Every structure is written in structure tokens, then in C-alpha cells.
Amino acid sequence: MDIYCDHCATTPLDPRVERAMQPFWREKFGNPSSLHRAGQRARAAIEQARRTAARAIGAQPDEIIFTASATEANNLAIRGCIAAAKKRPIHIITSCIEHACVIETCRLVERCEPDCTTTVVPCGTDGVVNVAEVLKAVRPETTLVALMHVNNETGMVQPVMELTRALHGRGVRLLCDAAQSPGRVPLSVAELGCDYLTLSSHKIYGPPGVGALCVRAGAPLEPMIIGGGQERGLRAGTENVPGIVGFAAALELAVREQSARRSHLQQCEAAFLATLERERVPFSLNGAPSPRAPGILNLSFAGFTGYDLVIALDLEGIAVSTGSACASGVAEPSRVLEGMRLGPDRIRGAVRFSFGMGNTPDQCHWVAECVANIFRQRPGRTPLR
Image (cartoon, rainbow, N blue to C red; front, side, top):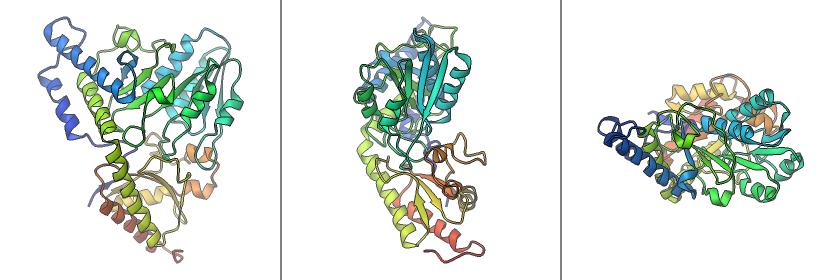
């Protein structure tokens, strides 16, 4: 039995999304920048997708820019905001638990922009960034703060709304990476109050190779990819029409089905944890029980490295990871867990289980049974607690 429990890395394409995309591969394949009828059909599909995506997150259609990924969207938001900033010097604040595409882009801007510095604020062992720590780092020259919504390794929900309220009136822009949010937690740009919000298609049962950046009215942005007038001149290049249509359909479904998805993921998680506890498997939850998005569990197991357990489960046909898909192929400690200041044994023994709509509580029970069996079979094992 093959069981996929790595939905924070990527998700399978929803058949309903695939059906929405189907006509734009062969029948409605025109270039949306062309003036003829075929091109205008493609243009109309993009604009409908823009309206759908905006409605799903409480934004306006002209605030949505389609990109090739959330990574590109985060790059565009950070670099575009800084390039458009009129004041110098520039100061950026981000957190130690951000995705690599945010932290590395901040570092790149720091290296390339004169008079630019970056502050990386710490995180507590609960996996949540303290708003007071961010505010303590704010300076008169602070231009941008980047804080994600749902952490991709621990599932911890960050206090974005609280931070935007605290920053109100200070002239500081806020970027929120919300790639893991749709379908797991409520998501509204208007309620969060952020200036920039980024999304990923393949995290929500949409096609890979598509993302979006929501730029609230009045937020400054300079293009990073030039050469055409696409996306209001802010992101040049012929649009991926089937991908954009699929992304909008996936986002709309995630929002519409949010309550049912959350309930399902909670059931899967409960079945998994109950079995681990019944089998007396020694584990620690990395991050607090709440506020956490359902279906994302980062656990450390005594006496095992995360890498060894991932391989052992893979041999049983179970896909899990040691953390972010952008880094889990490398045998290095999790930067997120290090940022949470967990002990070295906790960090080495960490595994992320991220359940999805294709899982069932029975499957999750079986996955936990496999973990227990791996512990029983380890050489020189000590009795489980």
C-alpha cells in the first residue's frame, strides 16, 4: 500500500481542476496577448481566473499578479518593494522560520542594495514569532516586514493580523507568505491587512508552475521580469493560461470546502496521534498544539534520525519528509527547528507528516502502526515508554 503524507511539499491534481484546465491545452490555446478571437478567448479566461482568485481571498482583481510559483511571487514582492522605495537607507525585518525563498531574497537585496540591512527576528520554542520581537526591531528606516501565515514545517499559524495592527501608521509594508494556508485556515487579505500576499497552486491540489502575488492598492512595486506588458507591466512573459485557470479553480475549491477539509484533516491527525500514543511510541511535538493548521505534524522520535525514519517509511510505501521540500533532499538540520532553539536531538529526529484530502483516518492509523513497528525492530532497542 502506497500512502502519501507529504502534502506540504506538493499535492495531487484535483480531477475537477484538471477538467477546468482541459480546454486550454488544445481548443482554447491562443496567446492572450493576441488581438484575434483565439487570443481574446485566452485573455478572457485569465481575467475570469483573476476575478475568481481575488474573490477567494477577499481582494480586488487588479490586485492579483500571476507568477510561476510562490517563490517567484516572494522574490517579486521583496525586490519589487525595495526597488520602488523612495527612502534610503532601507531596513528589512523577517523571521528565522521563513521559507528559504524569503530569507535568501532578503539577504540578496542586502548584498546588492546600498544602505540596506536585514534583521532576522527569533522565534520561541512554540514555533510562533512574537510580535513584540518584531516591533522591537523596527527602525525609522524599516521598509518591509516579511512574516508567513502558516509555517510549512510545523504548521504553526503566525500572528500576521496582530502584527499588521501594531504596524499601522508606521509606513512599514508587510509581506505574508500564505502558500500553506488555503483550505487549512481562514484566509482573507482584507482581514490580515498585509500589503503583499503570496500563494502557490501545487500546494492546494492545483497544477505546478503557477503562483500569485496579491499587491494591495497603494503598495509600491517595481517589476523584476521585463520585456512585455503582461500582468499590468509587473511580470513580463506569456501567461500560462491552463495553469492560471487551474490555480484559480483550486483556490476557489479550497476556500469553498475549507470547513470540510479542516474537519477531515483533524480526523486524520487524531487517528495518527492516538495510534502512536496507544503503541507507546516516544515522540515530541515540535511547536505548540495551537494555533496550528490541521494536518501538519512535525514530530521528533527518540533514538532515530529523521532521515533514517523517512527512508524506513519509504520502504513501507509511505511518503513523509524531514522538512521543507526545498531542503529535505539535503542532510542538513532544519533551519526552522534551529530557529525555534530546540535541542540537537530533537532537530535530528524530526519528521514532518502532512496529511491531505487523499488520506483517510484508517490510512493514518496504519502509518502510525508502521512507525511503531519500525521502533520495535530497531537494533538494540529499548522498551517503548
